[in-house]
Image (tube, rainbow, N blue to C red; front, side):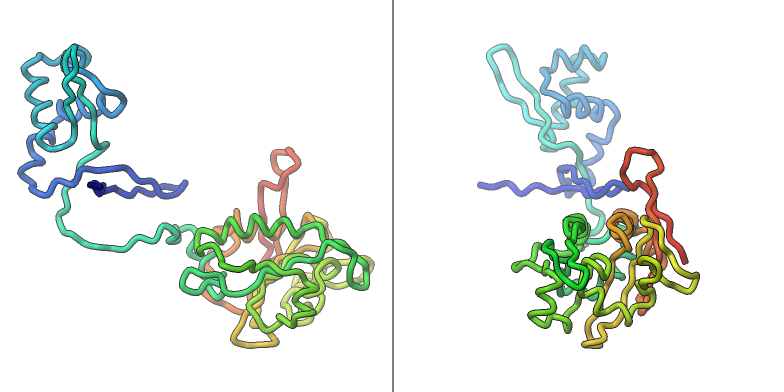
Length: 309
């Protein structure tokens, strides 16, 4: 017979955590064990098994009192007492006990958003359909292609994006990552698209560039042009969202930079630092944000993001 356990769910800044619990239905059964001495015994047993003599000695309780509380805890189903040749061994069966005041059945989705990710969920919502990914992630081909015969070196950034989106969606049944050359050859332009990289290495970025709020321009070297001017620094990137010009029911998100490090800055802004980047987002479209990535601690890795409005 399989015994179904109950769990309490806790949340902090690092995620969700569970602990097993003994559900005590009658409030009168809680009173005998809601005692600091009983809890002291439970705390000891939660770390390792004891016999009553050692519990009595470590907690400085007389043997009679120790036996009294052990009996109450056993009756509540929180501990087990196993006879052995040299006495009994007492083990904890649960790490907590609880009593329900009202039996509400609130379904918990382990992928439910935490408060700090609600804006990111809103930003990517068009790509999430009943917990499934709806669309394609487009990366540049790793072979020389396009008018500049460029080789994309930022495709692996998609793995980080996938890890981030995994908190909202289940594993797709089919591969949602496609090459820019696939989008062109298979005419996938009328889909929801997340496009990674600039127009030199990703030809889809090239083809949608004129529709974007922030545009890549080629003036004395590549740069990004927004209302504040032209941005040409390597560590600058852009995150943008528009209605798909080829199908207004779909959307396109662009995550890119002039150089690899700019695309990486934009990717980190959209994932690791999403609570900063998308703070306050409520569905605006078109939407765009210039970002800059910095290596503050000097270890060669971007560890800080600045958004430029």
